[in-house]
Image 1 (cartoon, rainbow, N blue to C red):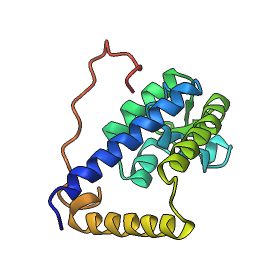
Image 2 (cartoon, rainbow, N blue to C red):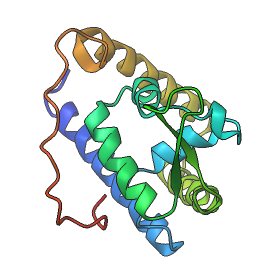
Image 3 (cartoon, rainbow, N blue to C red):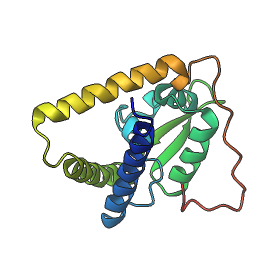
Image 4 (tube, helix red, strand yellow):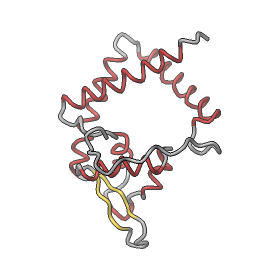
Length: 170
């Protein structure tokens, strides 16, 4: 394997993310720094009692709890998510997506589709399926060598966010 393939893959991921952020900004929802959290929350029932806790959400997405906490704080300040005290255990908060979050997610999904359509322009349906199969296989391979949060050697937590920081870069 060519040693540059990792660099090309990194460039692809960076360009994909930048294209998504540009498309989101054009639709007026560019301030959502963690759209994947809204996607995950949209799969839960509307009943706040069935909404996930912060820890459950972190586990489901394989993201460190401090990272989830910082992202949710920004999303909550922007009105995209709401925290409600668990009726059965007042020490736990349940996180749910708000209507504003659902509306932003609808716009965001349009942006993601536009970017993906542009990225796969000129690919046949079979080629698209093949690329997705390769990506799934690469992901599984990375999980086996430490790319999964459940591995014993988890990465250190991210640095804390200074209190004066605003949500803009979230």
